[in-house]
Length: 115
Length: 115
Image (cartoon, rainbow over all chains, first blue to last red; front, side):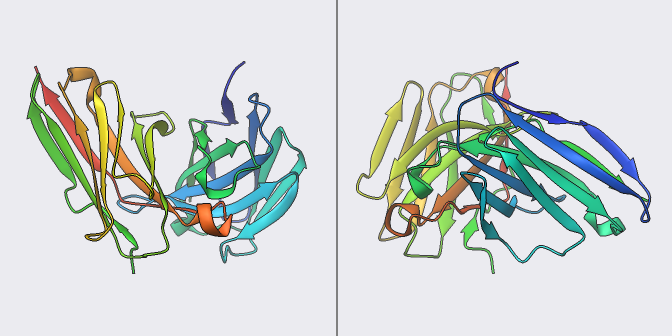
């Protein structure tokens, strides 16, 4: 497996469910990101982890809870979501030692539908 | 308020001709810019980047131009090929000076190259 992988690719959940999105990168990177892409909106950065430490939380509601157990894995735990949270959730990774001039490599995304 | 704008949601170009995709930004602190390409059901893939110390960067058929005074960048694809049909996102970062890992994305332009 190469690059950045995400599971599941599609997820349908009710508002009372708890689910988790998983991201794994095989690039030897140290920074990982969660983005949200809603229809007709730009990609919105949610969280940044650098060397397993959270360095950015872009005012994300607490019903989204990230976890980064090591530099290769990133999770997004979801609970009591709202229908407006339905979107494409993208994970990305980058080297993690050059700040904002690094290229970020994206996974294929998880398409989430909240009913 | 959107700091990175792609005002053309779509563009159609004949195969072999030049495709020009435009992007405007408002934040004068941005110092690093990237273009990503996205096919359906895949994550964005990095295409080309440019630092604010340059006004042009070329990679094969792809050239990015940066006009700092106008806060405008453009992506030229010459010659355009049907496989270039995708959604193109520009992104900007203030990372070279601030070290932040935050990219701001535009809403994307859907390019269709007609055979």
